[in-house]
Length: 605
Ligand code: ADP
Ligand code: MG
Ligand code: ZN
Image 1 (cartoon, rainbow, N blue to C red):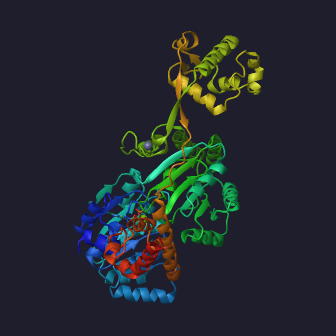
Image 2 (image 1 turned 30 degrees about the vertical axis):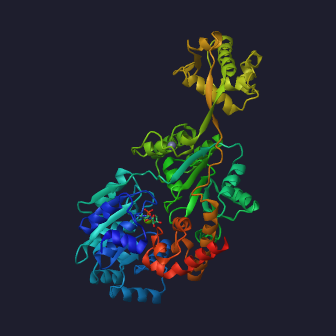
Image 3 (image 1 turned 180 degrees about the horizontal axis):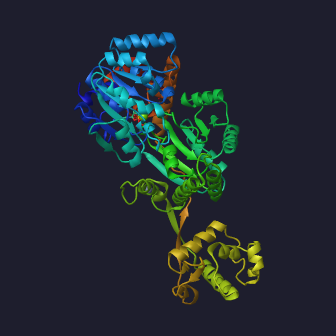
């Protein structure tokens, strides 16, 4: 069978995504590969398709036991014979899986890495035909990665002990060169084709807001997205408790997850989210590894994370189905303090003083970059891709900053006040002061330092008292950017440039672009109202089927597939097969139920 045919027939997709085709061709040509694709990039397809084309049984090594069951259910549903072996199976189930495996019934067999050392499993692997071994989450082999698993180190020996060496294909979302090098070396890949696809996720919309009330903004954002699944990340357990409670009080079906809950509740809450019983998950960063829910349509950060690495990974859990999804960060200057506190108190005892200092310095640099993301007025996507060393266009046109609208505001009077205040301070003290103190004087602050230096006696004291701190700061920074003020690099003092005379004495007017708070953006993936009704009806049908079969809804069909189905509203089985994400087996199994729903919906109109 040809790859494209398999893609169509089993998975109902018409085109390969970036990188997939190349990796699949290499594997089919007998070459090892290392595929580096971002979360949601479609790594699974890169070994599932070859498994279908090659015959025999492809072995998939995956660390995420909790996901194997769903993945295998999804494959079985698509008509691909698949099984898994891990510690969650009962003795009887295990025997059954072994029997089928010996019979060569599976095209794919998922195993946890720990299993590779079990004699019974080694014997099976040495008996059956294994054309391909896929190592998923391959960064687990590296101590430099975030999720080191010692059992991954045994994979290479396991492969060497097989009578015939299978093609070995490794996949990860981790971009750093060091981890990639570890993977190649420790898995002993042979001349692998290394394919690193772009880290850009075009379907993700990025936005940073600095709202006056985070709670109010969060509630509005969640309400606009009612019925869709989202994750709200908070920096601390206490914040998770508070935010989850306030969403629940507002009638939102929210649940929570953090390391302070007992295991039983964590699992229950995770399941509630996984199975769409609760659509909003409020969590600390403890919630993540092992989450493979494809229909998360937004990730809101209630607090700024400590690094862009963490941010991109967490935000990247949105939109794995390829549908438009939103990644919105609610920023407040206090978040920087929280992040600093977490860095200062999060060190490991195992480190020497010197090492700890080094780690802390790196953490602080990462934090700086994260704060830069929150404050930049430039393209947010570009900022992220720069950070990861990836090329990109100047402006993406589809992030919060690229779409922001500005109005021109005449700030001439304010500028005159700011500039003359800086002059007065300098005259009074004999030296210039920094930005913060200047702003305090302009706003009439009763701060100790202001009073001690008697700056409250200046005629310019309190001239801008009616403006919020952020607005005064924005004006000062604008004057600096435009060259009317400059910072003395030695003392950090703000000084006037000769150009300032234009504004103070020659009547030059100044206009500053001021950002208009976003008109509410149409919610991600919004359908026209008629289609949206049908979408809801299709969701109900999907929920029924999922409940009957005891699988998460997205295993039946993803939101992306339902969206396309609502748009096309197929009336015949042939049209149904045209829907993206509908393969032949699923069409046979579910086609009738969905076609009925569509017909009933059309009849009502
Ligand atoms: P990763 O493991 O890289 O994070 P997955 O393999 O879980 O990503 O795939 C993410 C989603 O993308 C899945 O819902 C999958 O069905 C979808 N997908 C993969 N390849 C394609 C494709 N060629 N066309 C459309 N959807 C795809
Ligand atoms: Mg994956
Ligand atoms: Zn942009």
